[in-house]
Amino acid sequence: MTGPIRVVVVDDHAMFRRGVIAELATGGPGVVDVVGEAADVDEAVKAVAEHQPDVVLLDVHLPGGGGVEVMRRSTAADTRYLALSVSDAAEDVIGTIRGGARGYVTKTITGPELVDAIKRVAEDDAVFSPRLAGFVLDAFAGSIEVATVDEDLDRLTEREREVMRLIARGYSYKEVAKELFISIKTVETHMSAVLRKLQLSSRHELTRWASDRRLL
Image (cartoon, rainbow, N blue to C red):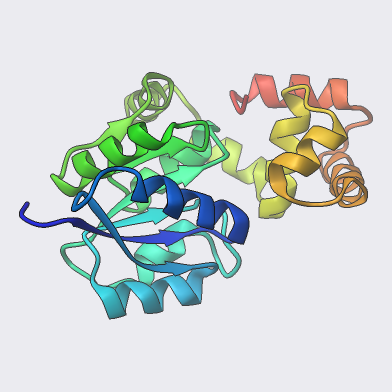
């Protein structure tokens, strides 16, 4: 590929989106050029159509239907999609790859690693961390029951899923609030809804429930 890689950044958290754009700017002159950004599905579809980017850096959970909906509605034939998400749960990784993404990395990635991942995806390579690649291989080998996992999680909203995973991993309410850019009270509200919908009585039961389904 000649010239900088043209990228659209899609994430519903404005602060995180600005941070990613700043990190990409440090990748060196002429390497990555952020040509657009979006905060929800409709904005993302419009930005992809307008800019025809080489790569879309795409959050999995977005207002309006999620990252898979962006890929479904977009018509830019030569655009590649790289998922960048707080979630490393099996069903998110597998569903996003089935939806058309060429790679999936988590938000713990460093700036230089992200630039390298974008370069590889632009060259039509597939990019995963070893753990996430294992999910994809297991799914297509039939050892993860994705349909069952999806049926359970369908009871939860996208935000409730994010809160559920972090709480199940042992995060405090304060840590979840900081990670997701929401208030502690909002975390408490989502946690109550998660326990009610899944018919669980404590965070300890939630951790066991998530572990049994390989969501941690």
